[in-house]
Amino acid sequence: MVYDTIAAISTAVGEGGIAIIRVSGPDAIEGIARIFRSKISLKDAETHTVHYGHIVDSTSGEPVEEVLVTLMRGPRSFTAEDVVEINAHGGVIAVKKVLDLVLQLEGFRTAEPGEFTKRAFLNGRIDLMQAEAVIDLIRSKSDRAFSVARKQAEGVLSKRIKALRQTVIELLAHIEVNIDYPEHDVEEMTSAFIRDQCGLAIHEIERLLKTANEGKILREGIVTAIVGRPNVGKSSLMNVLTQENKAIVTDIPGTTRDVIEQFVSLNGIPLRLLDTAGIRDTDDVVERIGVERSRSALEEADLILFVLNYNEKLQAEDRELLEQLKDRPVIIVINKTDLPHQLEIEVVEEALLAAPVVKMSVVKEKGLDRLEHEISEMFFEGQLEANDLTYVSNVRHISLLKRARQSLVDAIEASDMGIPIDVIQIDARSAWESLGEILGDEAGDSLIDQIFSQFCLGK
Ligand code: GDP
Ligand code: ZN
Image 1 (spheres, rainbow, N blue to C red):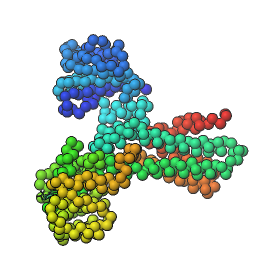
Image 2: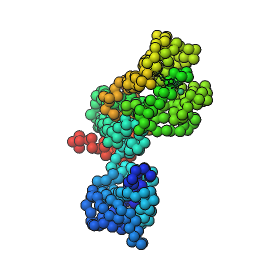
Image 3: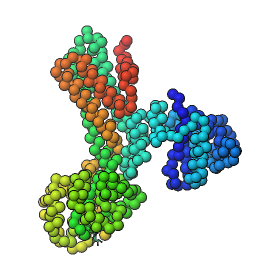
Image 4: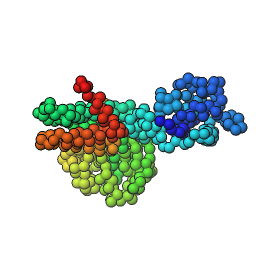
């Protein structure tokens, strides 16, 4: 496979003191050697070594920037091609200047977004699923989502999909034998085998699909709305949640609504606070957003934190909300427990039977850990810590898994109905292909090779 050589700044521009220009492709080493002056030529350097020197303007011969250059010869590199990374310490302008010089080299061009990862995939370094995980990794907004993406990048999920495919391949090989050697007449055994093998695969697919919801939540965050009548402490709660987790707060301006979302990680649980966070006087804005908008925010929410005042009797507004929140994923937050008790907690509990109750005092910062615990119970059945972090979190993967499952269900049904085995073969084959698509495998030849590799039947 011959590709051109690509280059790009692979660190965020303007952030931090160091910028890395990554170069990958057949001309990477020779090209950079032409503009890099150091003790030994890059061309003679060993793989996986770092070199100090200067990038020079090839026409004037003037040194442009003091750099460290890392050399990784393919296939032992991220893209499986020759890779050169230039660490430049100067400011943005110096880095851009270096990149310009790099891009002037013959056969060099700017990398498209994600192209280094794409090459790693095209060169067989990683499968499609891992490639997608790398993209998630870059985008992940919370610690936990980051771990999930990293695991996936390491191929945990890929391994499970491959094992699934193995099950289907065994099925296919078995069917193939039956078609090719019908004289063996193993009719009975075949339908039992088909049912077992498909059942096995379906079971595993279902286990993977069960993780999908958790995966989505980890990736996108639990869309959380904080509701309650004025003055119960919504803004205070919001502030505590965001300030305690300041390092990972990002503001995402709402696209279709004017509400600003705030992404926080509550001990690894990513919450997307749907509200007016980030705007100083929350109350005014909440009121201005109007009933309509709050209602749609409520409908959209995966989680509703219903805040009540421990220090006051239930009011008409509280009761109204109570009605609205029936059958919704609610956690009742009873705030201001540092003040004397007034609230009719039993009434609230009775109205929202399934909802957990968390008593807290935002000003005293009491009860936050309880809240965190309840959220974890609600969304991860308390399994958050124990989970091995294998999640299916990609829409494409989910739909392909469902497709594979359907094919396997069809195969069982066809077999039970005594439909000819060639038809069952088609179902099994399409299950195999759907699973392969997750990994980015081409079907055709690969299927045949795989089947043959299973065929150690003495011929
Ligand atoms: P919101 O209108 O629901 O957003 O309520 P705010 O967060 O603006 O809080 C209203 C008032 O209640 C403010 O003066 C807060 O300082 C106060 N407050 C919030 N939480 C507590 C708490 O846990 N205990 C006490 N005593 N006061 C609180
Ligand atoms: Zn407020």
